[in-house]
Amino acid sequence: MISDGLLVERMGPIARLSHARPEQRNAQSAAFLDALDRALGEAVEDPEVRVIVLAGKGDHFSAGHDLRDEETMRHQTTPEVRYAFESVRYRDYCLRLWDAPKPVIAQVQGACVAAGFMVANMCDLIVASEDAFFADPVVGAVAIAGVEVLVHPWVMGLRQAKEFLYAGGRVTAAEALAMGMVNRVVPRAELEATTMALAARIAAASPFALRLMKRSLNRTAEIQGFRAALDAHFDTHQLSHMGSDAQAHLSGDLGKAIGTMKAQIA
Ligand code: ZN
Image (cartoon, protein in one colour):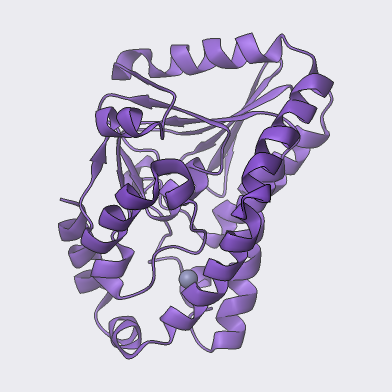
């Protein structure tokens, strides 16, 4: 059953959580993010679930935050209101994917943009189809310092992240594979089967060993400052919302901003 744009499926030891608003390119509303976080919590609590897959129905993984969602835009007022909203929905929810004590695999096709990029990259592994592409047009399109969770330099390398965030444009699946940002690239028709086979293979391992392995691997990044850097960027991102250019975009035409966003991705 699809609820708040989220489809939850169980296939043996695998729980698959899918963005399910393909006609909106799986843009993430506040209600969707709440539902995803709840479903993630349930999958984590369920002892029968060993691996979690995060996917998107239709042609695209996700185009990012839904700028037409009233609940999302209602919080774009004062710094206090925005900070509270984005702390929970964007930073905390992302870190719950990172901290989930079970492996999480992102299955990515088509657009994986801005907040879609942020969420996919908080997962442990990414399996992409050949048509997948990654983009973060936020700096160029709406004058904000990227998305809330700056996972980019950790998954693409500092040099690539700088070009990606300063200049916009897109990174193809093949380029993402070369950067080490995704684990596998397969034809679109094989995406689901490849992801499920990988999930099933991982699900055969000891849940406790996997849990501790993930903890150690994530701690390797955290010892290098991953979590502190994410927290620092979250605050800097909030400051950037108050920039005069960003404020002009916010009070301007939404359709135009979305158009600029699309041009930046092209
Ligand atoms: Zn923000």
